[in-house]
Length: 452
DNA sequence: TCTGGGGTCCTAGGACCC
DNA sequence: TCTGGGGTCCTAGGACCC
Image (tube, rainbow, N blue to C red; front, side, top):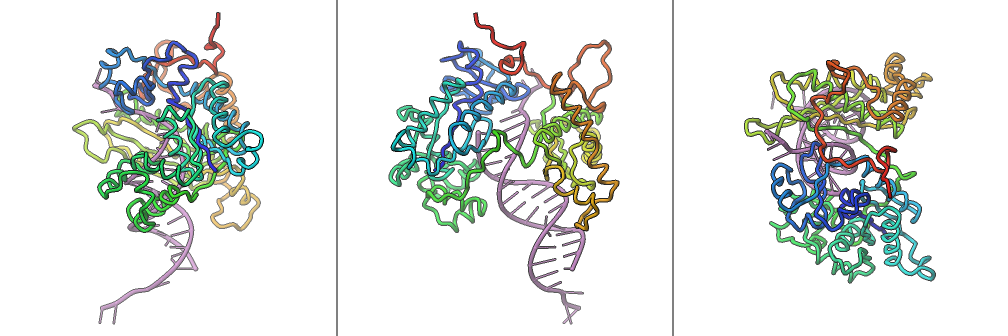
């Protein structure tokens, strides 16, 4: 049996924990660069504000309706998420952190042990909901069902129907059938815009309809094996297990960092500075989960909303590192520069850039065998290994300094712009704005709330 | 003037190998 | 005239998720 815990309007809820005056008022959170709406309170939803609405388009309405507007504050949200996940981890046997605001719970076998002492899974789910709120201030809903897809579906019903008290357990075939009938097919986990359109055109309107299609039909029209699994899961046959997140952290298979620039850029040096900064950040995350990367992708994008710009809006270049996996920022940056040159079209105005690290593996899984001269295939030359390993000690010092004195205290020279006239910090041309960012209430001593 | 960022999984064609 | 088949790796891209 699976549980799904999903935080309600998570980013808004994080702000409200430390600013109770926001309770009961419409609140929205904006994306990076204050671009568009990415989280809304119930009151903001009721005003018709939509996920993804560009700020500049709804600015007037926000003002008219006295909506409280915030820039996103990922330091705060990340820390609040950690607290929620920590509590869940201490409460049930297995937790899979699915996103910043969602976690699957392994509840298998719990019911039979639970019932005599503590009641059924509905009671447990209810205790979890109350417990998270009491310990973190974050409201959540909990769905419980025999498959992940049905747990998601139960969660969404629990969110929508206030009468359920924030919890729904699909404990019988009858209840499952009822739940499937309540949910439009486009709201099923795994059905996006394209598939929803295709499905409704075929007369499949609800989750219940989708649960009735044949395996062959699902394979043909819903992306092959993915579609087949989706339908099975709706029918109550689990196709996906729980992948517990060890010690409350999420281990990634790829790590990326990208940004829309604060202003359009057309100088190679400016974009290279951005790419270097993004890659520094990505490599930092890579080392934090104690991995090395074997594959590097760089991409640059034009403005897809501009009427005078033709597709393709984005070009990418991927390289399997000839030297094997590395976690050294300097090694990665030297390859990234070459990839960027390959993509670069002089005279083009760029809007966004990004990097992706793939092929992650912990240090010493493959390349170290070769150090001892094993006859493994694809073995690197000694020189290549030395290049790939780089200077782990240097990287460790870099991370330690930035951890202690703040992100970006020590950077690669190529990420730094020509010195400003005075000794004052200037924003890099690729950096955007965050005009309404709340304090880092939980992670900066200077930002601690003062209670009188 | 102003339109996010970070992930997952799957497919498919070409290169290359035996 | 006529030219195999299967596997893996690399790379790019599409669909989906929050």
